[in-house]
Length: 232
Image 1 (tube, rainbow, N blue to C red):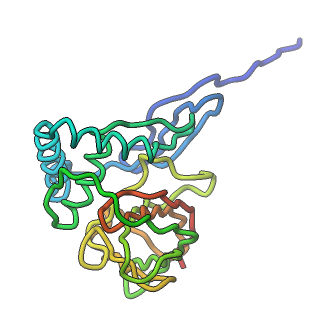
Image 2: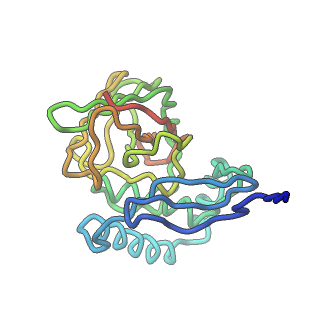
């Protein structure tokens, strides 16, 4: 007797193993699995603050003049959003939200004037180490000390077989240095991330993703730098 089997599983999606389990999904022709991350409490102070920021920004955008909106449109056209499927112009509201979100994170007022100042830094490398129970992220960039700013994002520990973090895996760190937005210092620049500001436990030998988003001094976002690193 001859029994022939075809492929056992043609597709799989969904989550296995709870909050810190595995998420399965399809991306183009690939079958992908990644670690699931979901905050236990959706009403933490930082999450509530972010939602309030977005509400404030949305209300403020509605009061822009036609000339102000045109300036934000031009800024968005000059900085298209990069995706797996290519670049696209996200439009005035998306750019207004991006700039003012980082302004509010840095305790600055919302601005209706599109920034036109210096070019953000270019980040070329990152590394991570545990120092006195905190995560220290070292950022290498091409800018002079104190000229611009950047924001730091990290993922939780990744499975060995996961090639790269997905965009939804990253969490913005609240508590790097004195706030979520860091003033650039001399490169390479070490940034201490307080353990209490990370929503998951990270220890030496963990593999994590790090994303650094540079902005200029007007909070105009540059090109994010991402890297999968082993924590030392």
